[in-house]
Amino acid sequence: MEFSRVSMISCFAFLLCSSLAYGASSPPAPMAMSPSPTPTPAPAPAPEYVNLTYLLSVAGPFHTFLNYLESTKVLDTFQNQANNTDQGITIFVPKDSAFKALKKPSLSNLTNDQLKSLILFHAMPKFYSLADFNKLSTKGPVSTLAGSQYSLNFTDNSGTVHLDSGWSKTKVSSAVHSTDPVAIYQVDKVLLPEAIFGTDIPPMPPAPAPAPDISPAADAPSAETKGKGSSSKAEPSTSSSHRIMNFGTWNQLVLALFGGWVMFF
Image (cartoon, rainbow, N blue to C red; front, side):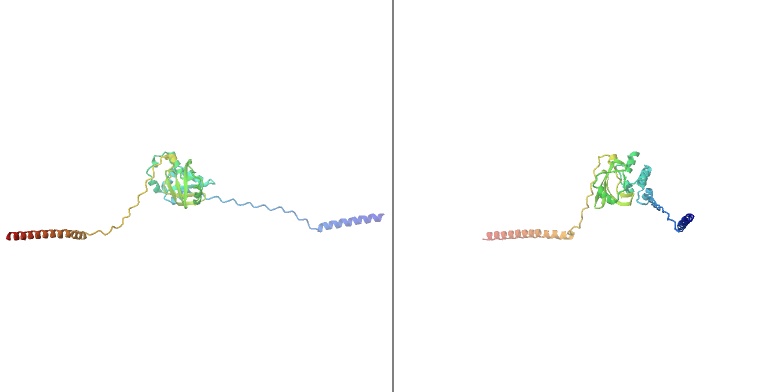
């Protein structure tokens, strides 16, 4: 009985030591790895600031239009539309010569509000490339930054963009700047809105008549030739008068001889 207890305790101690030794020799279980964080995408670069004053100063000359932009404070409106909106801006800029050619109506008679609306009338609150005007030509009047009453009509004629404001009919002659979000196009005339100048539009002056085709005249007869002609024409009349005189002389001579012959007999 005593021996059985000793044997059981010995076996239990052996098993306990074996389990501890196995546990010490076995490698530790691998630790669970946490997933790596997803990299945050870099923010998109901010669009480059567009300086309209600089663009209009180096191109053109657009000094008159730029002076109106600054005096009416419309330049701030254009700059904000160009740099702080998603739509962008499209500007139609007349050259200095277009303002000089404007006689009637005169811009000097406009109020400050009317002048501001006229300058705003030269821009649309969206970027339009030259290819976009083909679609605009089918949409009818397009509103400008001056408001819904100040609209323009466009016609795309084989790639040439024509504008019609009622008072002004002109075309885009060149692209000064056409990179989203700003498009600046040169036009040949100042855009005059009907909302300011009314609908009593004077008729267009008639087109100048084509110059007559002055071709060299046929060689005219010289004075010498004329003289010869006249003398040649006069010759028949002179010879005929001589013939008449000779006939009269012979007639008188015959009558005299006949009378003498009668008296003799």
